[in-house]
Amino acid sequence: MPRLSQMPITKTFTLECDPEATVTIRQATTNDLIFLADVFGKQTQIFRDNDESSEVRIEKTWNMEEIKRERSRLTLVGCNLEVEETGASWFTFRETPNGNMPGDPIKFKQAWGLLPPSYKEDIYKAVIKVNTDWNPAHQGE
Image (cartoon, rainbow, N blue to C red; front, side, top):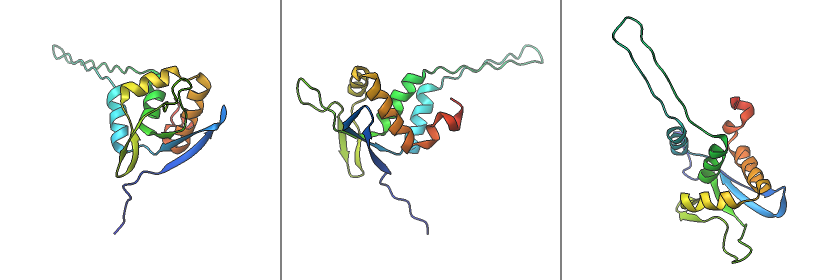
């Protein structure tokens, strides 16, 4: 019988913009994909039944930078960046039996927003290397 590991695939990367900085990224789970679809998919349907024709309107609302942030939040499970003034970890994580998992979403959003753009881009490049289905070349984003 085939067996699947409950431990996600993870890889550690050195950031191009800072050779001393490393991040560990895990492969997204089906739950992560469902969460992202729910967050960024808004659908409105309108049916008119007063005549033979019907109208369906579908609306989707999303922002690519938000998608990058959320994909990174869901898959970033390790990082050695520290806040210069305090020495605290830039990002926080929670420990589980299946390894580190993302921490508080609000704290992540705040920390992500303070990153220099080069760090943000390098982290997202690592996310794409582990989660190849999110590569724009594969999806036409």
